[in-house]
Length: 321
Image (cartoon, rainbow, N blue to C red):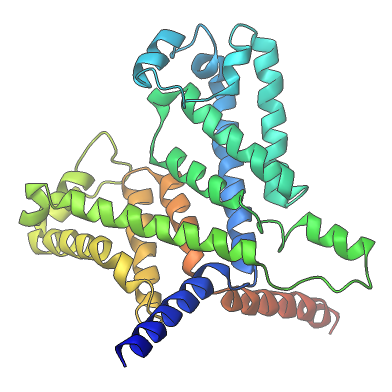
């Protein structure tokens, strides 16, 4: 009896594990993440163009000695930009080439190749200017790493359109195991991010006191919108503080059940948009929302696609009438 129970337990765990990681899924969610994450990667690297040599050049803000000290001599801090450190013309050429690759990846063109190159590009820029590294860059690199694993170009991509054009009679696959693996890794990584963010906040007295949110919105260094009027509503500050903390602490548990997942994802919108608008971290807030898309089921995205297509087809008819 015990033997049968253990066998059933083992079979259930094994089958559940295989379903979680390797069950083929519709790549719609991953394709949408590729478009948004690729756009963010393109934009953030385009911004480097405003002062490329000042950040990435030999005579810029980050000398080789300073970067080496910041990396503490780590041999894993790879960056191909060091190869062009003394040649600004070549640095600009590889920078423009990087932007072209990032754009190709966003559009889903030669995705299997460009996805790998995008990860190398993102890591190289982050390692070359560690003093300018922020949460946005870390999320960008995280998404680039998991999108590189495969499946990112199997939906909403030029690769898919070209394949349909070249082989009109060939039935293309509608599900992907690689897409599922990538999505699962993004999901788990997001759970780790929020769990550590929440538990880390428990070390601060202001989170226990319910005043941490005031410290954030009143900080003049990050303040992009005057929220000092909240000082007149201490109970609201305490509520916002405790709700955001509770959300981060429970995210990794409540985002998995279908019953609580919509609420958890809905709460991510005001939280990250609040950070974006009130603290000036627009790109970081949007990047976090892009990563949260990993928990949106592909059928929802397909339904939205059908709805948008139907509206686009109806508009010319309405105009003609």
